[in-house]
Image (cartoon, rainbow, N blue to C red; front, side, top):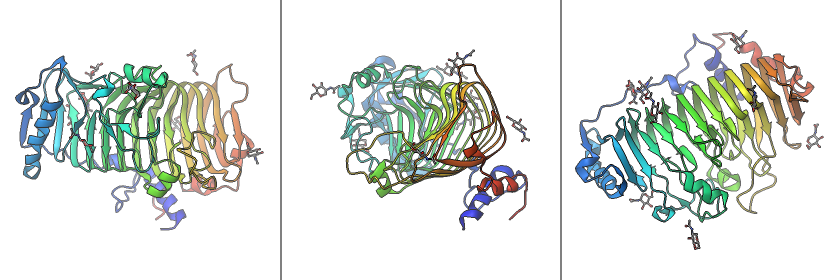
Length: 455
Ligand SMILES: *[C@@H]1O[C@H](CO)[C@@H](O)[C@H](O)[C@H]1NC(C)=O
Ligand SMILES: *[C@@H]1O[C@H](CO)[C@@H](O)[C@H](O)[C@H]1NC(C)=O
Ligand SMILES: *[C@@H]1O[C@H](CO)[C@@H](O)[C@H](O)[C@H]1NC(C)=O
Ligand SMILES: *[C@@H]1O[C@H](CO)[C@@H](O)[C@H](O)[C@H]1NC(C)=O
Ligand SMILES: *[C@@H]1O[C@H](CO)[C@@H](O)[C@H](O)[C@H]1NC(C)=O
Ligand SMILES: *[C@@H]1O[C@H](CO)[C@@H](O)[C@H](O)[C@H]1NC(C)=O
Ligand SMILES: *[C@@H]1O[C@H](CO)[C@@H](O)[C@H](O)[C@H]1NC(C)=O
Ligand SMILES: *[C@@H]1O[C@H](CO)[C@@H](O)[C@H](O)[C@H]1NC(C)=O
């Protein structure tokens, strides 16, 4: 498929309500494929494995024994591990395929706060090292490795990472390894996370990496404003991901799409693509509500974000990259956005991040191209847009349409632009001339908008 046809297709998926394009499993509209949840023929309660829900007893062995037992039902339709009301303290748990972990209302899984309780695992190959400290990383609280058909759900039970101890270790530069996450699923297929509350993660709350067919639905995620670099959901080198009906409030980014770090991400070469995000309420105190990168060396493309409410944050929508990353961020549509109390509504920077080591290739330039932002309304915004492309790899085809931002009195210049080009239509305040280039591809993209049967 040629590039132009692909873009047209993507636009049809986004704008042509009457047109349904199949074949690629739904293209940009991943959330509309909603496979029915299988009910599991077998259920056991964690109580049957001697767990004690007093918030003090370590239940790691009970969880591991229960999951080991449930493995034997994998070829019999799978099984459910039921966690009743209570406070269940545990260290890392490894899940298994064809398993549902169900947390009843009032059930809280608590992560042990003692770093000596946490196993250290190898870095991810697409990062080459831990992202915070060189070397290994603490294993996450709930893990899946090369699994198929896993459901983590409940009746609003919660998973609490007790992050405070970890945030202090991070802030005082006392970490020996990179911090753990609440859930990490590696190289897994058909994963559902739903109907749960995630609290106080040490670092990320939900991290699918090298995964396909991930559905994150109706979860609430929260970490306090001061918690350093806490992130909600991080789709990382993963494809066919749907995130919908979630409320996320974090210290740093709410949703961050990634795909590996410099030479390691380039070598691993696994993009994040076909991601659909809709009906989410996001707050990101010191970061961005929706972030792309800065680790994007495997590429990020074919992303559709719609119907989002972004509030009380430093940045709304941000694309981050730097020299040495390589990769691309392209064919991304973000529409129906409501924002309030946001310092920078939208932006893209080619000067954000750090390198894993000295072996990065300074000539590996990232590409940012074909980004559509439309139907946006915002109040109490300080900077409407901040775009700083790389001189050797300017950002291209940034297409803005139907955007009205009310800028507060703190603002001096609402737009900052360098090494960027694109086109705008019905945008207030009036953008910088760089974003009003009539010869950009945005014109043809605009003319496709509204048509429903081009192909
Ligand atoms: C969990 O899996 C990881 C690797 O995926 C392994 O290193 C670790 O030992 C496992 N832990 C348990 C308790 O089985
Ligand atoms: C969301 O989850 C809560 C429990 O956490 C449940 O009561 C509610 O019905 C769910 N909503 C949807 C739309 O699934
Ligand atoms: C879900 O649980 C969280 C934390 O326990 C609570 O704050 C929230 O109100 C609950 N939501 C619903 C829909 O019951
Ligand atoms: C980190 O390593 C140092 C030196 O081995 C050790 O003294 C310290 O207890 C470790 N800290 C943690 C939190 O693991
Ligand atoms: C979430 O809860 C709603 C309402 O109880 C239920 O209809 C839905 O099936 C649940 N989703 C999952 C994945 O369990
Ligand atoms: C406007 O947004 C800023 C964040 O950029 C916030 O600090 C301030 O309180 C907001 N003002 C009002 C009146 O809500
Ligand atoms: C412009 O965007 C607003 C939402 O911000 C939407 O309600 C309106 O329908 C859009 N107008 C057009 C012409 O698409
Ligand atoms: C590109 O960015 C560089 C560094 O910020 C700046 O010196 C240069 O003037 C920019 N080029 C254009 C055409 O804006």
